[in-house]
Image (cartoon, rainbow, N blue to C red; front, side, top):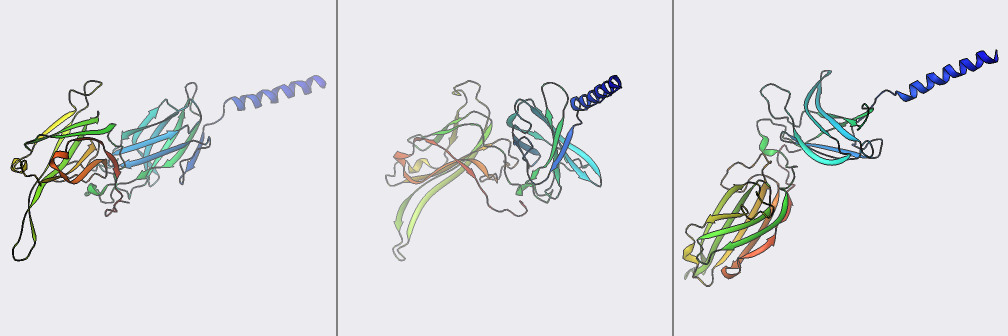
Length: 305
């Protein structure tokens, strides 16, 4: 009897160990927060057709992530994008399709989810969590211009050298950033010409230009080969010898990933960029080396949220 009881005990112990060594993958839904059981976090934001993702150890140290973004409708899940990383923390981006024929843009009326699984270095995946994707697109797929810009700033040191030649014939920009982007500037000169003898109103003479140019990554570590951008200044040389003339400048640099960098004859609709400006500066004080300011506009455009 004692021997039979001992055998039964060993059998139960083996069954218990077997279940413990091979647990079923755990899946949880977290629709209100991107916090995980391990105390880490995951954040996903859709801007245009790009998902920006950042994560901090959602499944613990040295455990990567595997992500599937999907649309769920009528009980059917359509995967529209995938991403994976072996790092336990980081940030990145990836493209998604709409999953809908003839529609390349996912409006914010569509609910997006992401299934995030652990990606251990050894062994199978054992845990996953489903989180919401923050969709910043316009509700109108035919009007993507109202998309809120949540893309990153152009990468690099936001320094800028500004040099205008003494004859006001050209302006040079020496940029510090070393990734592809777009530079747009508005430059104007003017002076008080006279006062109207009857009304006493001040009459100014001025000229203004707005120009832009794209640029690519610098091919060398110091960036000296392509960091210079030169523009002509039409009709401004006549102001060079006017001692009372002043200049105003606004210059912006945009990340090339923004979808709203189309030519419009003015500054693009992008709301996340580097900027520097000055107003009514004497011509002798234009040239300078500056640090550009990071700008993220929050103006409420129709259909942005």
